[in-house]
Length: 211
Image (cartoon, rainbow, N blue to C red; front, side, top):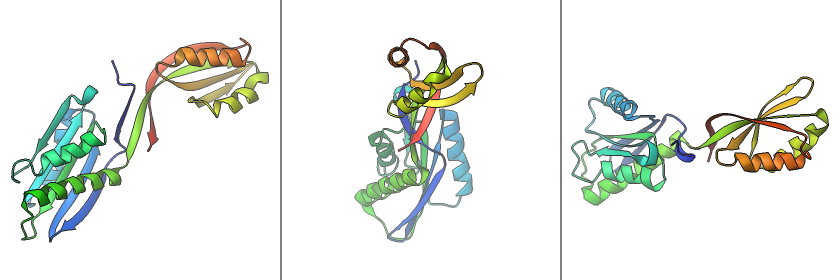
């Protein structure tokens, strides 16, 4: 069963920070599956082939079923896990983060590395942008023109989104309704129009909104 709602990244994002002369470059991308995450990681490693480290973390799938990270040569637990924790705490899935480090000659210590990689991952997410994906069903409502103004006005205060309107001998409006709320929507619209509406349930799909 598809998850009704979850957070992910909007798309590619990149942010560089410098900590005690070391360059940390966070690169973030959406990944629909583990293969896409691994391909992104390989692309970054090729791009930054001469970097000291390319540390990684990703969360993929329903219920965050796939969670993996790599320290890529940094002391165990100081890079990949802190990056993964950023994704977990922000409840972001279907996303991959690679933090590339070019060593600047000054050691940071375990605590310093944990803070640096965590900060880089968080700033990378900010650069990428976070969106909420909500599973919606298209409900098609057919009604007389006399109801159009009232329905449009009332829709503004409801958790429904008008997608498309067709004008023929009557009005046909496609309205996006959160999955699980179809019966409530039908009851609301039927009451609003005194039963003078035909409602058909259509396909489902995800709608994205920035947060």
